[in-house]
Structures are given as structure tokens and as C-alpha cells.
Amino acid sequence: MINCKDFTEQTSDFVDGELSWADWAQFRFHLLMCPMCKAYIEQMNLTKILLSETPPGSVEPEVKDELMKRFRVWKAGEDE
Amino acid sequence: MLVTSRDPCVTPVGMAGDSELVARLLDGDDAAFATLVDTYHSTMKRVAAGYLGGAPTAVDEVVQETWMAVLKSLDRFEGRSSLKTWIFRILANRAITRAKRERRSVPMSAMGTLEEADQPALDPSLFDGSGMWTTPPVSWGTDPDRALMDGEIRRLVDEAVATLPDRQRTVITLRDLEGWSSTDVRNVLEISETNQRVLLHRARSKVRAALESYYRGRDD
Image (cartoon, rainbow over all chains, first blue to last red; front, side, top):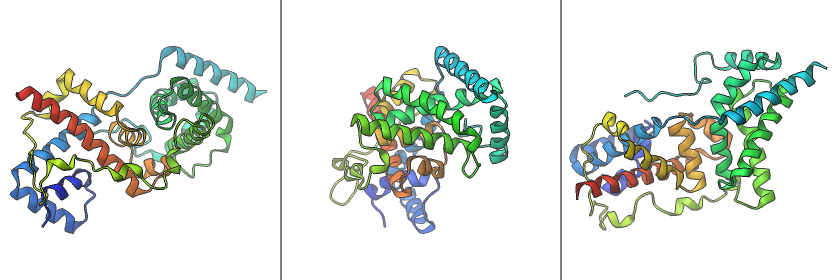
């Protein structure tokens, strides 16, 4: 039997589907019995979703212009 | 809700897509290079910041040098790894060299013992001697879609990620924000699977804790 503290340590592996079958079974059993840990795993799930929905970063236009310029210079050098 | 990957290399095209992209780059195709820059530049900055402790000038310089190094050695790309992994390995090596020169931080690959493993992911005082909650988590009473629309929650998540220790921030950024596989993260950062999982778990636990204190405060 795992306790609540053990449960929280395995939550990342659980949400990623990385637990072994034996650990998964113990984890599911605890989840069934413990409403506190049920709240916890829902929070971890929501946390992962929120992280995955973070908008991607972008390149500053002036940085991209400079890189494109260097790409053309590189290409011109390659062609010589 | 589907967790989607924004990475174009994670497509059924895979490596075949890489060799086509490399051919277009060697051909001087502007659009191909622009796509590559749009896809990876901001992620490269975040990875470099993981080694350089966020020193903005050093980060920008290392990323720009990496692009030039990528172009210079592109004709030697053999496709033994994905183009993405290859680019990010060049970046990591340059960032490590720069970090050593500036003695700014310990390179990720020099992480022999994982000092961050010594701290538990959760505050031990949340549990009693038998490992049972003393301060049980409160229900956030919210569905993901509503939380996603909430600008304050979005800001809170960004802030929680930004304040993580360098290595935890790098791993959670690549895995959860960018949707990388654990294999790609291990190969680029040269860390073991165990270290990666510990860093990811700690990082997520801290972001969750930041959200938890927000929801708790809101209920009061």
C-alpha cells in the first residue's frame, strides 16, 4: 500500500503513462480510496495541460532579418 | 483536450523530412531557413539560458553563433540524429563552452550528482509521519478550458516556470511547453532518464504549488 506522500511522488510518471504495471495498480487503488489525492492528480493534470498550452515564443523581427541576411551571405560564399 | 506538439519534426515525415529540408537549405532556399528559425530560435534561447543563467547578451550571442555553425557544417549533416537534435547539440556544446569561460553556471552535463534531487518535490510538512496529508489539496473547481482563458492563471504559470532552477526550467520547457520526447531531451541535455524524470517532476510540482496557492488565496 502506498501512502499520500508516495502517491504525490509518482504523479508525473502517472500522467506521462510511465509507471510500471505494478506501480500503476497501486496508484489506481490509492486514487480510488483517497479523495485528497484525487484532487491532487486533477491538479497535476491541469498543470500539464496549462503548460502545454503556453503560446510558443517568437523571433524578434530584427533578429530574424539579421539571420536571413547572414543566410544569404553564407549562400553567396558557398556558391563561389 | 489534446496535447499537441508544435514541433514540425514530430510528423510522420520524420527523418525523410529532414533530408529534404537540408537539401533546400544547401540550395539557398530562404523559406526553408526562415521556417527553421521560426521553429527553433526561441526554444534555442531558452535552452541556452538554462546553461548561461539567463545572461541575455551571452544567450543571444550563443544562439546566433549556433545558427552560423549550423550553416557552416550543414553539408556534413549525416542524418544519424534528427536535424533538431543535431542543431540543439551544437547549441548545447557552445553554451557549455561559453558558461565555462564565464564561470556562470555548471553545465547541465556536468551534473554528476543531482543536487536538486536532495530537496523533495513537495514541502514535507504537508504530510504527517504516516505520509498522510495534513494540508490536503483544495479542489480548484475549474475546467481546463476556463483556466486556459484566465489571463491571470496564464501569467502565474509563466512566472512559476521562469523562477524554476535552470535545469528544471530547461527540462519542463522542452518536455511540457515544447512537447519534446524524453529521448530528445536526454540526447540534447546529455542527462540520464532518471535525472530527467526527477527534474521534470520537481518542476511540475512547483508549478502546481504556485497554482494551488493562487486558488487557495482566491477562496479565502
